[in-house]
Length: 303
Image (cartoon, rainbow, N blue to C red; front, side, top):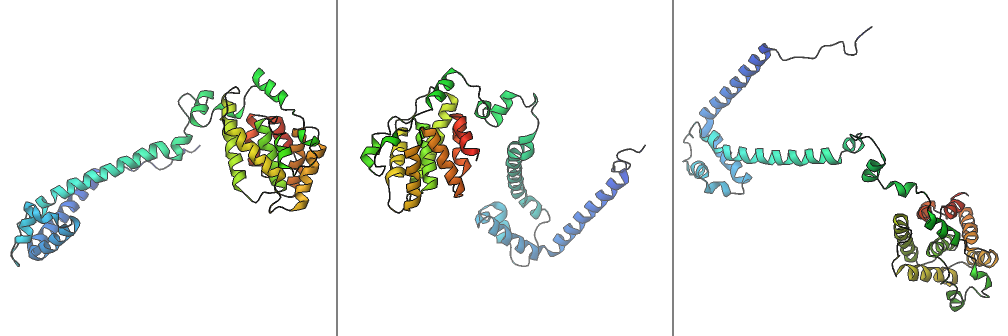
């Protein structure tokens, strides 16, 4: 039976430490000798680099005046390059430490390893809710209020009695009895079968129903914004009656569904099937329904 790691961990021997120390001191000695010998030239180069690095502010310091005021050809003091570098070294060290702190902070909070690390108490309901999304947004036990809301979702199709669905005034009178979630789903499926030329209406409806579904998921009895129904009813009226820029055949198909189906949910389901046949249905557009009417969402996504 063999061990997992056959090679022992490499250790630093005293001899290696001595060798590294000798090499370091020898390097410093060579650099000091070079400075001692060529300081008249190297000092000028050093001064130019410091002036560029500090945007000429270095000349107003003591060491700056020393290096820039030295006559050409004169050697610089041996310790001058070391002492003059102390301030720059401290600033560079502080900046390096600051960058390192921000890098460590980002690594410890936003790196994928930090996000997927098992919490101390494990991935319980509360931990999942705090880290990802509320558990009731994924699975919510129906209560009496939700059951009552779903019972009311079986709304009759009042458009069936309208003689002319291109008559905006006649259609408008039938909108008030439609729950907001059915108005949103009906608009989206109508627009999928017979797209409106104004695509801003679809964006506005999606934004409105998703926000409303979030409120309903948190509290089924929560009041919706006063602008919700006017937004949905206005878009739905436009989707049913507007002919500008739309093909006659798809719009006629929409009207036939609205004239034949007994309930609005059945009309939405039939329109979704027609849109899928045209490859115009986008299932993510109806994900918000799972918080409000999962049966209707299932009818749409079951095709």
